Length: 245
Image (cartoon, rainbow, N blue to C red; front, side, top):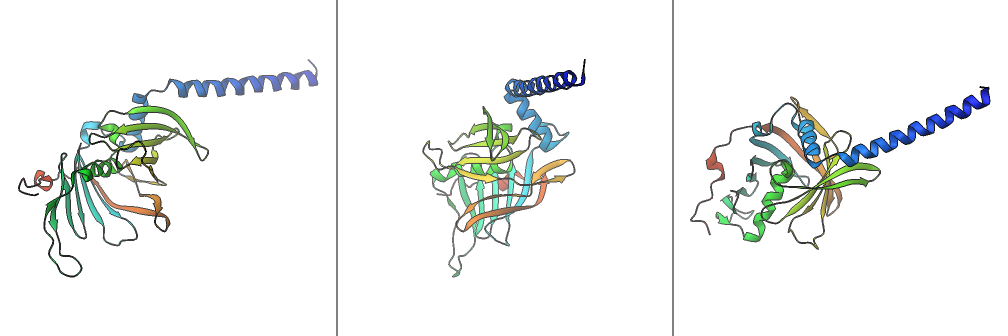
């Protein structure tokens, strides 16, 4: 074989190998299942912990430039407590309420009250932003999506009270990088997108340092601090008095 024939043979072989690898990669992606994606995402986020070992999450969120944190506690699968500047909000899995209210800026008293029922579904989204809902609820795998040149597995979840969201899981590291949220659960909702730019390592557990979204003045980023896992919150923290109206 002369030099010219050798180069030609080498070129053909390279093309065939690249074509095979491309096909094989696509075929691998087509064979991946929802179960595999969720299992790999769990491992990427929680390392060696088993699903049943993660019972609660506490984190402080700083949003819209506020220096006062929202102190948020999630107790799986559906209880949520949010201590904010104006009081304490609780969702007990069924309904939501202000269980404590502080006076307004003029010193006028404000009292505990049940929130309107059309707001209750929002709290399930609040939980789903802190702890991925596909670990607790049925989900639908919607295939591979390319966004800004990057590939993601889309996993869709409709929450019990009707709101829904899609998680976009990176095909390389299986971390959630984007979410599209319908707060009202309506098919014609304008979906709210938020983007996770970075994860921090907490003794083998990865949790976002925050997420960015479009605010009234353009794109802004909410920051997470003081992440804790399995803080064993007292069940009393999620009680809503039956007397509240």
